Length: 189
Length: 179
Image 1 (tube, rainbow over the protein chains, first blue to last red):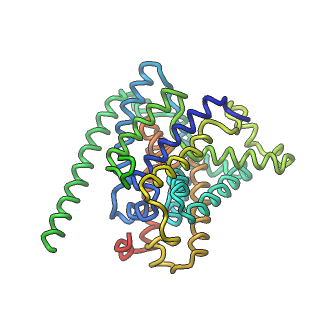
Image 2 (tube, rainbow over the protein chains, first blue to last red):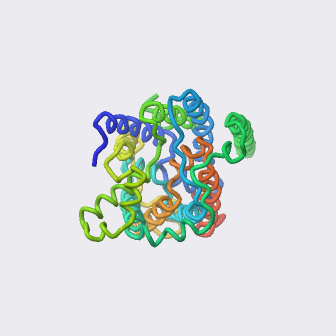
């Protein structure tokens, strides 16, 4: 029923760091999340991209040295694609994602509390109708818990190098666009 | 610095990456949110309707995976996210202002009840999708992506395509002036 107390404490402390960072990153705000999906404010992409690049380097180093193991979710294509589709519609209506909605509650946003209540209902519907959703989840192939290096027979570091380069290029593009925009508005004003 | 209202998104992202190292190094778990919601719902249903739960293969499947629903590390993490965000926003004074965000108000009016209903239904749909896909913007978007998981690299483009399409359907290009 419960994880051991030390593990719960570690989870709680990790969560405090997580929530603190989401709030400081302005990711716990409806305006910032919707600004991303309306392709105006790129804060969310900047945060996710940097987290993935930095995270990948350390986590794969840990995995290679035996200090941690991979915990990959199964590539049940139906579940992932239908899930992503519904998730996208839901997030655009709510305007917060699961982690940032909990953080927005911490920020005192009342609409986020209603969203989190809805999330509990959504989880309940998933559990209650578990058997009914299986045909949907398994509608297409299930490739199992696989990684890109595994299915391509390549080194993970090749992918991480690709991530670093793609990340650096994206940051350059975003900052150039922002610089250009700032220069234009200050020039006009 | 802790009193600043916001930090650079790159600094926040890099620190979230380091937080991922920490969670793998300490408990060998990836950062995630929605499994905790699933476990909460599963525990609640088992307590409220034990007979229906006996007939639900969900519980047998989780037992077989040796991952029975429980109050676990991730559950404590979700509680921590609430506390961490409260702490950060109190230090900087960046507390909630309006009940209805500007973009929503421009499109759907200033009724809080309508906004709360939208948030509730959107949240429900989003979580249902997250459980079908076994992850969300944290579990797939950050943790799965950094582990180079095939599932996550399918989920992320699908999520963004669907969310961008829905956002433009709801608010149109004019909505961009309100975010």
